[in-house]
Image 1 (tube, rainbow, N blue to C red):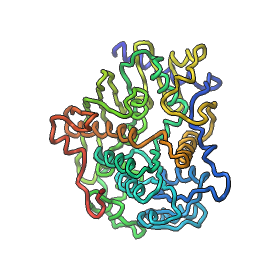
Image 2 (cartoon, rainbow, N blue to C red):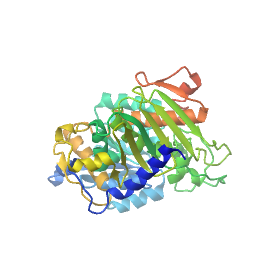
Image 3 (cartoon, rainbow, N blue to C red):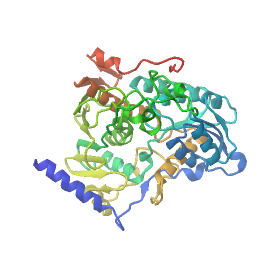
Length: 441
């Protein structure tokens, strides 16, 4: 084992214990906008439409009901939709086709918690229907979808918050602000660690359940026989509908890395993806189980994506290291905050009206903050903390990693033109064929 690998392991082991119990908790800039966004009277409440209620759609809608009332629900699985209607009080109108929900004048904001391959079309349709939107990550299925989303959001002026709620978590926010403020010195390497992809199959096709519109569930993707493992939560392990954990977790952790690096509106210039193997057996999960991606940025910083190890983000500079995940913020620069706190004027990544408060404990606290920021921006027409431009850039880096993995070669990316350079085959993978009548336009 190399000296670097050993020291890095020791650092991560120490990081797990540093910020536990009664350890130092600084005042930090964090999203407390949920208080100002809460309605002051019954007439101040928003009409909420919720699309896709299998799990995360219900989670985010539960956070949204502090600010409004669920008046409409759409889901292509009638059983799930009926359960969601009952869960939210039994008064919401249930639709199979989300377009009917968007036609309603009493729907002000839309929650989108569907599988990834539906995100772009539903978001674009909602914006064009005059709705503000909270949409789950990852924002897109392809790079070109993200380009179109950014164009439509700019044209329509709608407020869109992407569900990368780690930006509203005090640990991640403080870590990024510290890196921006030079507390690790000149940044050299960022290592983000996510999760492996599961293996599975071959699975057996079966009759479509009578309560599921399978054709509509598939949307723009190729029509195939129904296999229950393609649907609901396990859609993530099929490349047709998602990008595996590289986009599922990458939408969170690559976003944090690029935010700290100051590349949230840019991206890498070279991407090298590798995988142990690419599953290609029919009716099996077809994203690579074990993979890695190295991304080089124009300033020389290297972002390493790994799917083995402790989940989180490790920033390494010439003056120190800093590790952050959903339970830990650790490293010598963090220890130094006790005697040398980060001044308010150094917090520059996002401006809140009431920016400083101590973090609070509680389940889904950061998601609550994130939802509060969204509704505050709906009222003020400000840009949310997880705007579509930065989130498009974050997931684009992940998409490029998947393209490199699947082609088994490095690719060169121009973040200014958002084009792959000198590789027509790779460039063609920035979009995918779309099945009518569900094509995005």
